[in-house]
Image: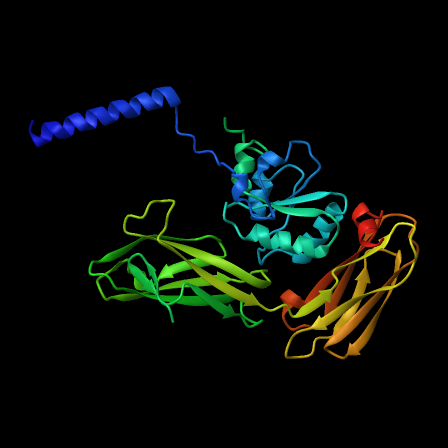
Amino acid sequence: MNPWREWVVIAAIALAAAGGTFLIKGYPNRLFRCDPATLKPDELCLDAIPVGESVLWVDARKRSDWDKTGVPGSVLWNLDPAEDMQAFEADAAVRIVASPRVIVYCGDENCGVSRQIAERIRKLDLGAEVFVLRGGWRALSEAGRVKGVNPKP
Amino acid sequence: MALVQAGKLDFPQTLKEAHAPAEVTTVTTDFEFTNRTDKPVTIAKYDSTCSCMAVTIKDGKRSYAPGESGVVRTKFDMGNFAGVIDKTVALWLDSDPEDRPSLSLTVRVHIPVLVSMEPKTLKWDLNGKVEPQTIRITMKYDKPIRVVSVTSSSDAYKYEVKTLEEGKSYDLVITPTDLKSPGLGIFRIETDCPLEKHRIQQVFTTVRRPSPSDAVAKP
């Protein structure tokens, strides 16, 4: 068999295998997966927070993102220089005193802003447990727990 | 100093610390590197984990011949960050897989807190004993910073500012008028700090039902 024909045969077999996998398994699942074994001490997986549980969500993203796709009932607290930090702190404090649990989320899975905000909330020492959501807004969005976004199957 | 070999590029340091003066708004850090292999190396992609930090490669150059050196430059926008902040940059070389960049560079920025309040919140138990509590205000700047005024969101507290050392240290002494109902008080402390970001500070007071953990702490 000449090399060209050999290459075509190999490509055809690979394509057939890929097609078979697709027919059996469907589209690749690229949903965010939270592995509890890899959580840092102040992190939570979304699965651990049942819908309806008394939680104060704190959105650490830009105001425009929070307006459009924040968690309903959440408060905004980011580190944007154009924002009023004292107002964020005061607004959040009023809600935190009534919440046993506060969870901060950011727009990026690796976002460090949410951890900064969580640290500031802890320093307020208003009695709530404070966590950072692993997977951030993406995890919430895929679960359909934000405004204007349907859950992914 | 130990070199860190990112597979193909040598970085003398992958962690750099920067002590930001209070007046600046951005911190720039350079990470120098050299290609010590015998083949050209290409920086395929780089990414900062925070929108607060921009990353550039000096002269926009992405491909480095053997022995050639370059610089990865980060520019951190301090925004409203405070304290010690770690920010990282991931570098993908040549054909690194998407989920496995060759290395990570870290900028550790120390951002000064000019006006410190300790504690940030004063707490009283509901129906407990009415007694004053104190918040220590400490100025950590090379020029004096004075407390100009204090305002409260609630009439349920009496308060006074005591000067311990003019421009350096103050006590804010707060006393609730009674402890018959739960609530949150917000105190705004205005200073004459020349840097606007630090000028106004805030502390809180709460009157709350004692929690079981408090009972454990105070047998």
